[in-house]
Amino acid sequence: MSTMKVCVLFRPLSPKELSEFGDAVSVQGINSESFIVKDEKEQEFDFTFDRVFYQGSEQADIYEFLALPIVQGALDAINGTIITYGQTGAGKTYSMEGPSIVDCKCKKKGLLQRVVDGLFEAITNSEKPNKYTIKLSMVEIYMEKVRDLFDLSKDNIQIKESKVHGIVLNGATEVAISNSAEALQSLSVRENEMMCFHMKHFIHFGSDMAVHVAEWDS
Ligand SMILES: Nc1ncnc2c1ncn2[C@@H]1O[C@H](COP(=O)(O)OP(=O)(O)OP(=O)(O)O)[C@@H](O)[C@H]1O
Image 1 (cartoon, rainbow, N blue to C red):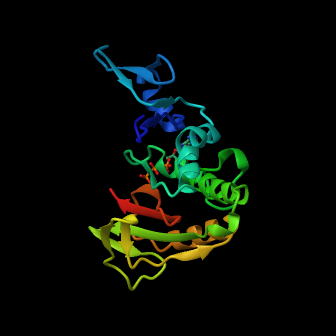
Image 2 (image 1 turned 30 degrees about the horizontal axis):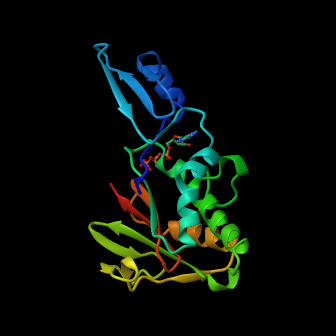
């Protein structure tokens, strides 16, 4: 089985897009893995992914398919990463955070909140909850340098590969967190320190149960 899953999400068209291109957007779903796009010359292109999330898909379904296996793997010290990728306005922030990191209605919660909740829930339900600690790092890759958003004096963190821990952010601040609310509050405050406006996002689970949340400019 592949260790990587690639999914695509169609977000709803904005009112502006609907009025400008509504009729010209031609996507025909085949099934939950494939769809056809027709261009302006009526030429058809078909695409296949591990899963296609069509317009109206629930954030919960995306979490369950994409992120839950990674959360469960993290308890067995399996590294995992979730990346959103797309052009500006594609829906990366919404997919990761929903309308807001904190203070967000349950149904619209993004992957970030669900992953943090999922980790704490999985630990609580595990046989030895005391053997785990969750640490949070948050960095931004800006102008090809990695900045530590918990300690802005660290503005050139080196990315290293260790045999034991895999990819590590050498010297990045790690903050121990004890519950979801604390983690999300911390993430939402640190987000204000970011310098770039156009970002892609990833969440990385290290084998030491660190959750690294990083963003970089496109
Ligand atoms: N699944 C969705 N359901 C409803 N609205 C969505 C969805 N995804 C995105 N949107 C809306 O589309 C707009 C653009 O989304 P978003 O800000 O997440 O894009 P982005 O890829 O992060 O853009 P940028 O790279 O410019 O930061 C926002 O108004 C957001 O609320």
